[in-house]
Length: 169
Image 1 (spheres, one colour):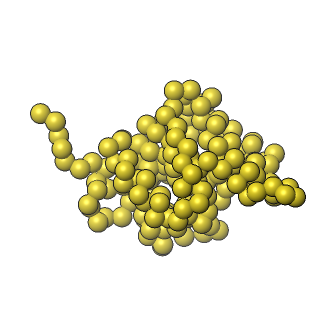
Image 2: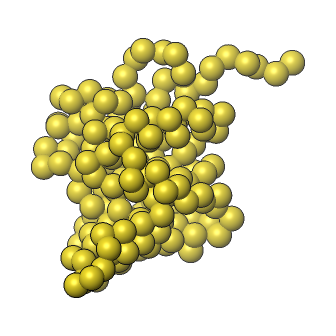
């Protein structure tokens, strides 16, 4: 008999690594990582892999800087990662992030690769402003990876902050 009780979800929130400024005539969407951003993305993926981070699925903004941040996870975690690129993670409000989490509650682990201010707003709403400010007093940095345990759907308890990985360069 299959257990149909709601289950908790391990959620990884990853803000894209540091990007360069838009070149003349370049759209914001097309901005790529700068040199520091590439290094941070590689180091973060390696550290995450070393700590056993292996999401069942990655939902990634289609913006270039987010795709470039997620790509090192293929080399360091697994080339079999299920990654899906979602336009709404670039252009949508924080509610889109919540909708995507709700739609993936059947998974054990999920990673979102997105942008500020949405990632920071999402963290604040999941764990509470005080916990978020204590963990990230200067705001959500580029290439910051937060691990959360979300309670089962329908449970009003806040998410639990499990770990925080920050760029080291």
